[in-house]
Length: 206
Image (cartoon, rainbow, N blue to C red; front, side, top):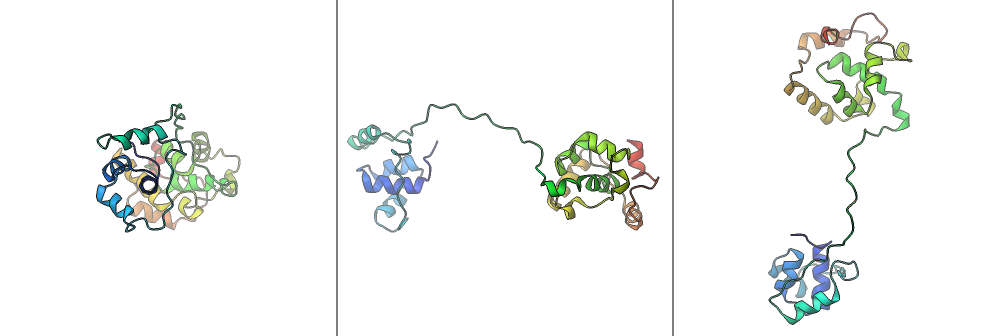
């Protein structure tokens, strides 16, 4: 059942400005009748300013009067006859301008250390595009000589939790993470992006 905005504040207004029963107010506001009685007794919502449901278009004065005349009736929430705004699909992650130049470094790091991630996951994780990922992977990016693999979490492009969730999903989908030995070997490397060695054997096999 749909409830009014700020149910408790609405209940305060109805208690103070109408002769509706506690049960009627409780049913409309989604509260227990004892809680409405406590509001009337000044034990709950002390100092709370009531919210007028007539002024904000959730009730009509005629609807209140109709229920005041018959305690067995229940208030009906007024649903505005307006089209709902179209739901917007979640767009690409917004990245501050100052951090956009760090994306190629983050892509290089993820390709090197987490080859199990799909390109689609990389796009969602750091807000990049597949052509950019491809250019970094193939070393054809316009700034390739200056790209240095850097952790996207430390760059502020994603959180550690988001990265861990993406890795867990990749494994569930059949991705193969680096072994501890491979990861240790990666960590021992200087991290130069311009060398001729591939990010990993798995990346070569893609």
